[in-house]
Length: 573
Image 1 (cartoon, rainbow, N blue to C red):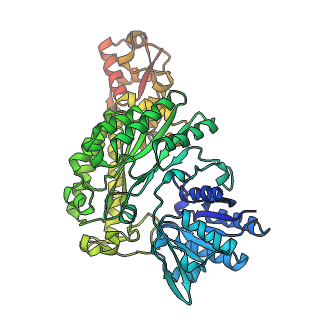
Image 2 (cartoon, helix red, strand yellow):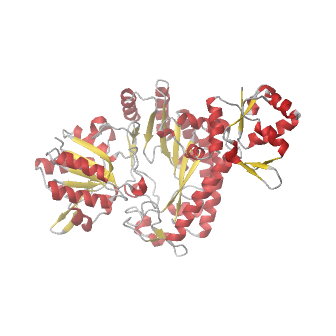
């Protein structure tokens, strides 16, 4: 029997449910509860899946208590599931997570939940379990919770933060209600808290004091993961906001990762703070040396005034420099967001953001990936509590009109519909620029080919590879090179003996024009030149094409060069 079942459930919004990756909270709580002698397991999935698990366990008396994780997107799911459990099974239910601090009487009345867990949850949950399961103590004395008493919401004093994070246990497979089928990587947090005060961010608003696990403790968890996991596609996600805060600690961690890379190859992800990386570029070199595959940078805006309003303590020039250094250090995927409808947003700011995004993509040269989001009114942040100070009007603080697909704020100049159209336009511009850069050979061939090796497992996918997948000609060209079934002309030792080979069907990409010429992907060929094009089947060599068409080598190579320029042929043996 389980003492507690914890669930993080969402409806399948926009026909998508994220696979387990960085959602550590309920699993950390399960590990802690187990360490303290309770039987605990956690489940992440869709609301219907979660309800089925609840029924399967609760109908046979297999659960004594339930915990629910609440974020900005699943409040209504928690209302439904909590009310369902209370009505049908009469079990104590507690709700925690980042949105719990914003929940009020209305949520408690509708859901019937017994307590809200505010901020850091381990010690608070332990006391709640002692209370509900062992009849120890009372709700009024448990720090870090809110609860209903005689129709009023009572909020107790906050609980001090856990100082020694090394005392917390590692997550293991016993923490999962069911075996993991989709994600076999390791999500790991090496510290908690954030010293920065970004105006839109919940983490920096509340837990400004940073507490770190020792590097030895972090590496011990990684060792346990590497020992138990026999997969060839190992992936580690460092989920801290502040992994790159201390250069000495980063070097010690990277030294440990390098040693382990020599025994077992793995890829890894981390987040990085632009200003600290800019001031300590040696950290970027360490990340690259230790095999960091993907990094997420807090970009957010392309203008100095907006970055200042956010409290980012960085500049557009620093962002460009850090992207360039990450690229040169060998970090293959560099991700960052641009926030629309944020601080002092206007048409002018939007135009500057567009230009900045263009620079970022150029600077990244096939590594930079830019997401476009609109401002989210997360609880207790400066922008949510005083939006007028940032030139923002919040239209939907309850997250009921959007699932990430429509803005929740507007400005005096731009309404939500204007901002939605801007979001779509900017995403389309980014997509078009990425394709154009690939078409125009602005991304080194070696970099493109490196994406194929990572495509064998889901965690290795990057935005550029996904973009490549949608372009049949480009993908076919580079796949032929990757597989060794063809070469670029510059790599061929004796071009006359090589066999030009089309990578896609000719009929799909040719248009016959009124003047008799044939257009293939922007190149125009005369009737005589088409005789050469038709022979690019891989069955005859360059010198044989010359013989069959009666054309000299210069004419044949002119046609072949134009086809190769459009990624239409490779050279086979």
